[in-house]
Length: 289
Image (cartoon, rainbow, N blue to C red; front, side, top):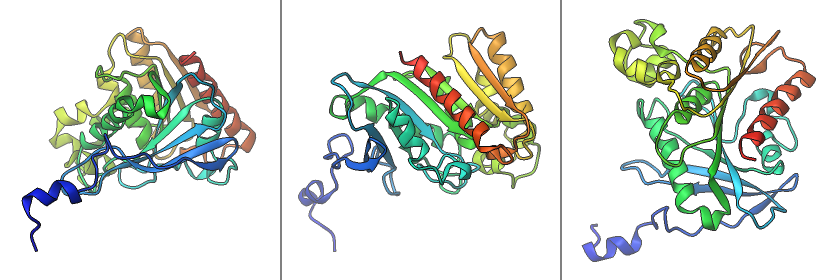
């Protein structure tokens, strides 16, 4: 059955720019949560969503924003997951960041089985733009935005921080992320190749455009880089080289190469993981003072 043309606008879901926001629900730890808020319309697929974590007792001023970007080799992952070492935290890491004074947005983005680069980066830009359009309703100040990502999400956060499109960010926290996709050769089955839609060697221009190392520019916001010295999945040389390139460009950067830690902080004692998390959060808060 085909609906008459004049009925289609009536039965379609409201556009994310005007759709009613869901009620905020208590999430523990002094935080409330708006879960599953659509932020864009994409032809042929379900609307991407974000969760928004807010302090329960925020004052009248608009809150600074932290956009969290999950990992998962650009192939999998969930927007609320900061890695398996923190899945047992109560309250969880995103709630802890919100309790410290941020509005925390954790956004879906298209994975490599759905679309190739730059689709995931475009989605994150769209999420920031949607938050900016509805900032008054959300109580958020998007002129004070920090991005924080881990692994593949750190890669996307680093790229997002280098964009000059509004709203621009004030800093990027990047955990154990690949920074140079041009190194990954002619294997078409690696996570990087699946992100690019082909082996990096066959798509050198796209691989360079998808590499934070090759996008460093003077005037980029400050970076906080953290990486395990024993990372067996993403060599910590990715972070060392990115830190050196940022320094050469005059971009402030703080780097932590963490002894004894593998990817996603495997092998790191709990107290040292807390230290890395706390240092990252304190750095992010200083960016929005």
